[in-house]
Image (tube, rainbow, N blue to C red; front, side):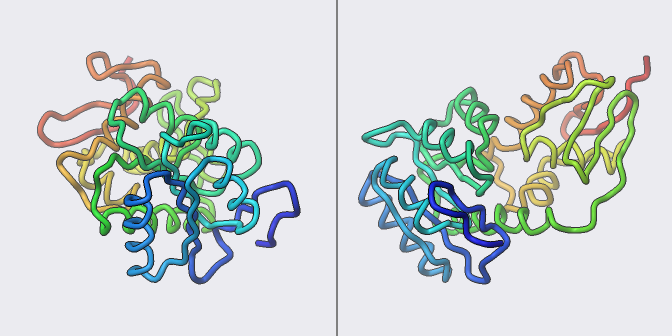
Length: 246
């Protein structure tokens, strides 16, 4: 994909054989650790210690992925996310110390592709980056046919879903999770399978990624864990998507 012109941020997720990651992190020790992990993994990287410097670096380097801290000294990371998303679909992984579910949901719904809670290990950090970049490449495969389950219609080619004719306005990973479940509707899918197949990262019993996306997806489907319509929890096993019986 060609580099964007001046004044915009290039979306180069499919372009480079060796990915280039931009790390926006104000803590010098954390920043050095992240850069070291990327270097060991043979991933090219640039870093910035403030939000404005990060935005400038994004313009100049056209990264394949951005790692973004939220507690920056000049402008908040959520503002950086908003400004980047206004002009680009470059993948963004939020890496911060806040583990509150509301914050995680807000950032994912605002356009973040993944959310990492500090502290985390270098191997997980690199695995998340590779998985996010891999999902971007998989988006270019031949589109699959639309799925229809009850009043739910999911179109993979348009990455769009409707419920009873109304647009669901799903975040990227919400759509991926829903489509994966819909392709296997009627089957019980474990959280381990969702994490490894949809997010393409190793399963961790403490990882909240699936739970957060599931909670937000249920809200958009107009249901809850206590009163499910499409997404049914099978206690101790996993999750099943099926059409409402009434």
